[in-house]
Length: 139
Image 1 (cartoon, rainbow, N blue to C red):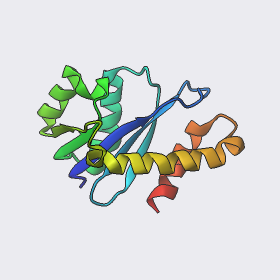
Image 2: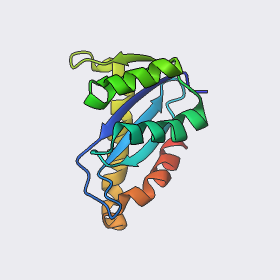
Image 3: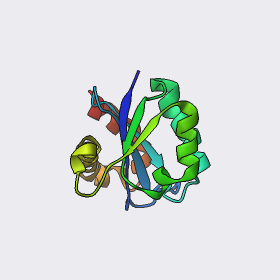
């Protein structure tokens, strides 16, 4: 069970045929294992909540705490109410204290390096290979 996690987004990626243009990065602070979820940056909060429940809570359990930056998605009333209902404490990192969310930043840098190394091979369909990148990162 993941107890303390960090989350952030990799944005600015080229659109794929499925209109994905970002990756939601969720990292367990203890084991450093990660989930990479292909998303549309314009995806609704309800849709992201369903993805979170289906891909994180279902597989890893409800975390005790989440550290994230102050992205509007994570500071929204909807997100706070969802996490309160699940019993998860939300913690916001700050610009001048990046160490609170350093694990996400290191994971994102590794993921970006992996994607850059393979972007020509994948010809703009990077979202088809995010699960493979997740496997490579976690093993």
